[in-house]
Length: 302
Image (cartoon, rainbow, N blue to C red; front, top):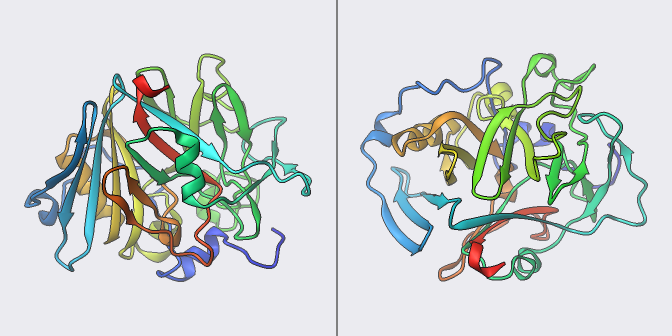
């Protein structure tokens, strides 16, 4: 990686403040037991529209957890990125055959909100590699039928990963089209399922137990984002201010999460904004800008 300021996954693992990532080679067991804190949780709904709600939970240390429940038949998911950097040549991609890994300019969340139109919420989304003006995304992403990037992370199933554990990791792809979503193993040799023309939108990321903070740093409490489906039409997004990935997964299981639980970018990049409540979890990096966001909005607004 190049650049004077780097935001590598390795750096995130070395410091809890910077946002360790995490995981386990066997992936996430859908039958994992929820911790007692999750079983005893009392949630308070703090925002709701037809098709989406946001609930808040106070954890034992005083930090908050925020849970979005999203009906994909009534709500849309939309990715927002900064522009491709015209002054930086793209690198060869590492996770999609024949595709490159361009740099995207990091943008402030207000710019992402304006790009979303009328939105219920906005969160940070993809892992990325540098904290320079522009950065490569870590893994493949596809938006509105166009592959945005083939990814650049050294912490994945490549020939010489930054840690040997990652040579055998199976990445996961969240895909969505119209009113339904799916989570499936990702194949970097052929790009499936993102290579399917019927797949319009998707992001490749980790099963939560394959997040480098879980694998390399023993799952310390930190700021995290997790995501799961209860069924193809219903999505859960959990934002943690200060908790372990295992605790977050337990909370999602109590809310009906089925199958894989995914994690996306967290640590100092963790962000949650809601239209009536404003900023609930702020970005805490040096300039408050990120390359990639996810908007949740009503289908009637687009």
